[in-house]
Structure formats: C-alpha cells, structure tokens
Length: 153
Image (cartoon, rainbow, N blue to C red; front, side, top):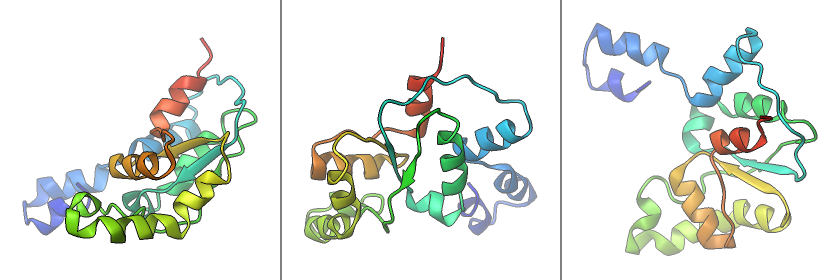
C-alpha cells in the first residue's frame, strides 16, 4: 500500500492511505512509545531469532519489531544477518527457481537457524516461514504470535 498505490496513479486518496499505512510492528511500537500499548509479558524461556522480511527491510521496520520483542523479559532477540530468504514472493515456488531459492536461503538464513535449535524463530513473511520450515524442519512464527504466546493473563 505504501508504494504500489502511488505507482498505480490512483490519486490523492491513495497517496493519503499510502502515507498512513503501517506494518503491525510499526504501529505497536509507536503505540508503546506513546504509552498507549503496555502489555505485560511473561519471561521467555528461549532465545528469539528474527528474520527480517524484505518488505520490513525496505521500510525500515525491522527495528520496531526488535523493540517490541525486547519488551518480553529475558527475550534478547537476535537479528539474523541475512538477505532475502530466497522465496521472493512466489519466485521460490516456481519449479525453475527452486534450486536458486534454496541456495539463497543457505547463504546465511538457514545455517543461522540450525545453530540455535532451541530458539524461537520469528519471520513475518509467509513465504519466509515456508522456506524456513522446508529448509530446517522448524516452524517460524509471525511476531503477533510470539507476542500473544508471551502475554500474561
């Protein structure tokens, strides 16, 4: 919505929407900093690894995600230094691109996850989560799920 709506030439209303569109982690982080979002979280029993989806990286939304995860006591989220997971939307699902997609994931993303077998893995992109599951046999979860899992009743 931030860039596609502008490129389609949909006019001033689309421009207004594009400037107000936020990812969940951006919205929650801003609300937390403004004092309007103050959840109580239980302590994390596991380390948390974070893979930034390409759209998060493009919109500088990885930092807000890490800020939110730091609200969980004992979380110490670690950003996985990686580029694209290799899926690039539907690219990795296409038969002619599967091997290239897997090779991209093996550059740093999948090896980093394998080094931390007991860590939570947070990946907001659906395709990223599929790539991680296929390459490591582990489930990655959206940030909303890990926040929900750590909420105190």
